[in-house]
Image 1 (cartoon, rainbow, N blue to C red):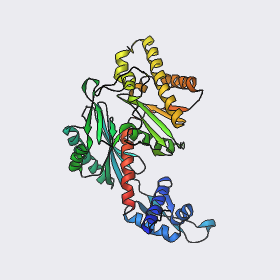
Image 2: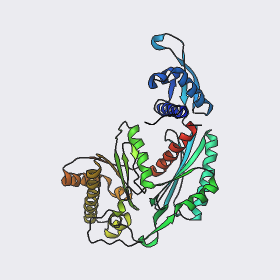
Image 3: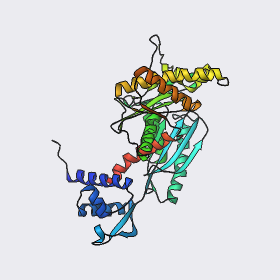
Image 4: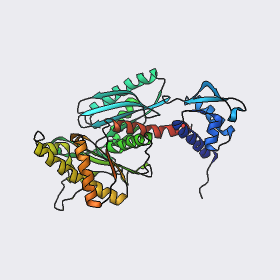
Length: 376
């Protein structure tokens, strides 16, 4: 049986109260104690610590005790902007950077419509400029930037420390990402997390569902556009797999004769990537639009069928440039084919969020670094 040291218990108590304050941003000490079953003395010490590090501040307001009896209770307000992080997403030819607070709210943004490869020196220099801009905004909001999260449209392999990215001519190449990240760290002096863009996106989508009071235990997010990938949440945790390659749908294949070459994209990406579809169909003609919808819906329904049958997940979100072409028509036909293949009716919805990878990357680094802040 694992034993816990006093510091472990202290850190866990701080994390519990922190999570409660995220959901209930104005509380008195007694109310926190009632929600946690912690002693008033323990809660008071943690509240004092949170005041010292800027997470909480007394509002100057007070509430009557239970039934109007007893001493008045000082109300404390959670400072959502006290700690923030920067989230950057690179998808296709657009790069977006967001400054995100503890409530997952965007307090600053910056976008550039230009293809700057993650592995290039130009990318590192642009990130340096973005961080300088965001630091100025953080000064205005009296915020502390704790880290930088980067969501990239590439296949990350944590065993080999590589990221596979698309290059010219629909080819792929592996890059060692540690040297790239070390170069960026030297310029910005911040902790950095690198994550696949769809893995980052699912954190944002999951947060959105929770905010809408729909809190699934498990979730699949499939993004189809410049590439094809999925994020997977199981028991409310991001599932990355042994090498962080879970959800690399580009390699899913329904053609027994397909032969991938070292530099070519995977079978599914060659079928559903936005550029492949635009090469295949003239979408200015309605008959081609109808064919494209059926072709895309059938393939995506096969993907969803295989994933939900293996993982037993009933909640699916789809997004991306391919879905953006005809979201309602595609959703209808995807649902039709999934039911045809399985007789099941999972909940499949469309997300039109344009910055979910940046928000998710920011959330990821906030979660990591706030653990450090809370255990100080």
